[in-house]
Length: 211
Image 1: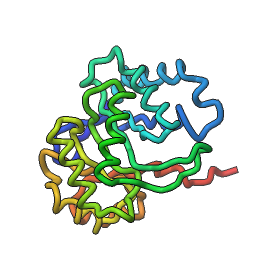
Image 2: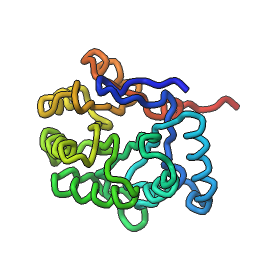
Image 3: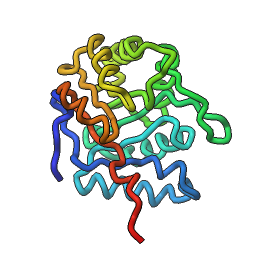
Image 4: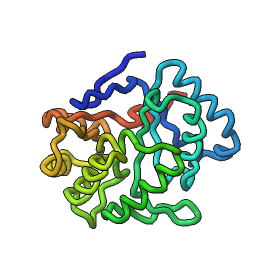
């Protein structure tokens, strides 16, 4: 397995990561295959994959519980856990909005740590930018969590290059926190011009297979 440095943080993540969303949400009967999904996670780790990507709102927390079960008997440093937070969902699964207020962030991470059964999360970031909260305030709270040892690295998702630059004024991106910007291919060029680490999310998902 090939490994790459996460920005300038010194942390190494596998070039291929395992997105765990579908093990708990958005696909019928996803939760019913829990033992098989845990087996998939174990096999991925055996093959050298260390990046496990999740969200606290996937399956209303089920995804984190699943990962927590899967990593229970693994050395903690064998996996790099990435968690998105902030999305608000109705009881029927519909999305209601985003909340990245400081008090909300601390509430979200408390539940995530409990469900994952770990003392810290490697990469923690809002799933979307909250239009009602300045990104500087969001990143400021995340920087506090870094100092407290609850998270190691900060990320942003669906953020413009300008938003990322504003976030970087609150906390340096070089060390000890690196911002990983999760963007579509159409936004990659602007973030790369800013020398910011980024990755494409589901770059093949919008391609229609030939018939």
